[in-house]
Amino acid sequence: MNAMLSALGAALLVGGLAVAVVQWFMPAPVQEARPDSPLQVRLKRLAARLDRTTWMIIGAAAAVGLVIGLFTGALLYLLLLPAAVIVGRLVLSAHGHAKHTEQLQQMEAWTRSLSGLIVTGAALETALLGSLSNAGPLIRPQIEHLDARIQAGWSTSHALDVLADEWADPTGDMIVLHLKLAVKQRGAGLARSLDDLSEGVSEEVKIRRKVASDRAAPTRQSRIVSVATLGLLCIIPLLGGPMATYREPVGQLLYAALAAATLGMLWMIRQAVAPKPQPRMLGKAVQG
Image (cartoon, rainbow, N blue to C red; front, side):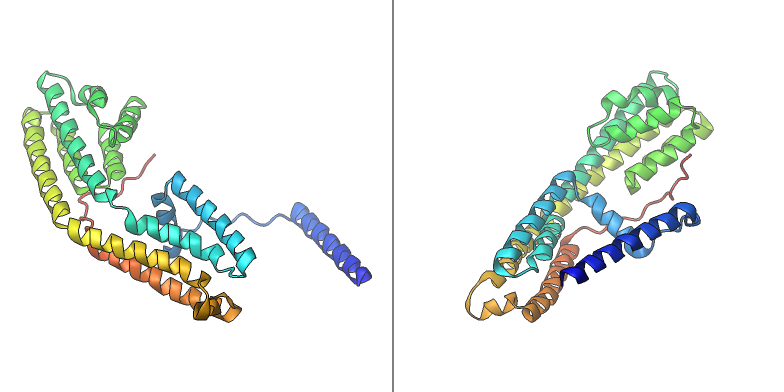
């Protein structure tokens, strides 16, 4: 037996060295970058929606799942707990709509401040560079990027297009359209136009807050259902009696399928109560 294992280890070592030599002298041809598949795009969007703290919790959940699996034999916990954390984070996140509404309010305040700077006689580029101090924390990074691009010699119109992409919001598109029109015409009336636009954004903020208030009850109910379901989903295999079947190999496969269906159902509930994104007016700008 020991001789067989030694021979197998030697064969693997020789094979690994042979592969390394081949790769060293005959490197693989460089392939052109291919566009991401729809699945890859969705996975990247999912990863972008999870912050660093959530990823740390996912790692801790995987470690706890491994410990539970080693002590109980239910290795499905190695995937079940991280999946529950991911779905729970996406399903239970309620601050997204409120954060977006706050971002709109900061856009409105920034637009008013820009109008005030233009009234004093400042050129549009000068007003944009001087408006950073009036930008709220949710839009300050985008305004900093805008100022940096203008100072780096980008055309104002192109820099505004990229700003619209970073905001990725129809209201932001409307603000950028007004500013791009001012870049082309360089005429009077921009301050008045920005004031009128600010009033429109303010009304939209009021409407969105009312919609959020109307959605509060179904959102709260969906949270209660989601928390209870996730808790039961993680506890059931650890229960005794008939539930102990789910710790057997076949039972774990069956329970994994049931858990996947349940997590999918929770996601559908979240999609049903979540506000639908509004279509944008501007397309994606080419950065360069």
